[in-house]
Image (cartoon, rainbow, N blue to C red; front, top):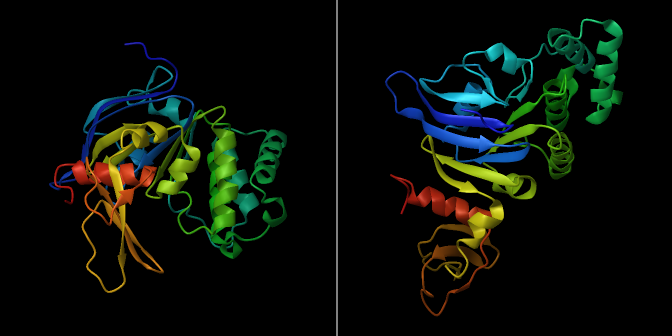
Length: 293
């Protein structure tokens, strides 16, 4: 079967040992741009990322990138892949420059001049030029994530996979990281895996919500929200009063604000609520088999 350019996944499944399935028949079509994979911890996001990065084989299914059969020819994908895992391993005294030089050589930059030019370009792109000679043990969390994205971008990959990229970053570092990802997505397929709804809402044109190894919702942020128009209601439970059940809730100085889905207004204390992606996310989790009620 001939597919249009991009990443195409069919029937991807994975089980570890005798445990429950980590992936259950995943089907996705992802074109160039930023695509979000949203789900709670344990949803299967990291398993999917590792499988797509050819770090482990699936039990069944197929993966194609721009017509290349990834499972049959994994090396062809690796030459076009950038992968940023949750943790970056390095010797503490290794400098950022040394890491980039080593990875560039491994990616095929055997000519010293070309390798140096690639490394310097990437250091400037992620704003690490001044810290390049420092040992990575001295880097902040944000600097480590920026070094990670520079490592992943060596050789201008066609497919970039980033797993929980902004966990632990302060707001300024998150904003810088978002700008780099958005820039890369102009020319590549970028998969952003996270449990932070705001990252997906701000960056991605399409997303899939994973839970229990399955895709439980897929579409655009606006489309998933518009399906809930007129069906969401909000209530403020003052401190010291019972908190009504709902999709999700959060604390405020005045009490607990609760969001509920209902075809009609649940009662006099409830007011209409404009849907957000976080609401669609919680509803998708609630509706999955075994989800909370």
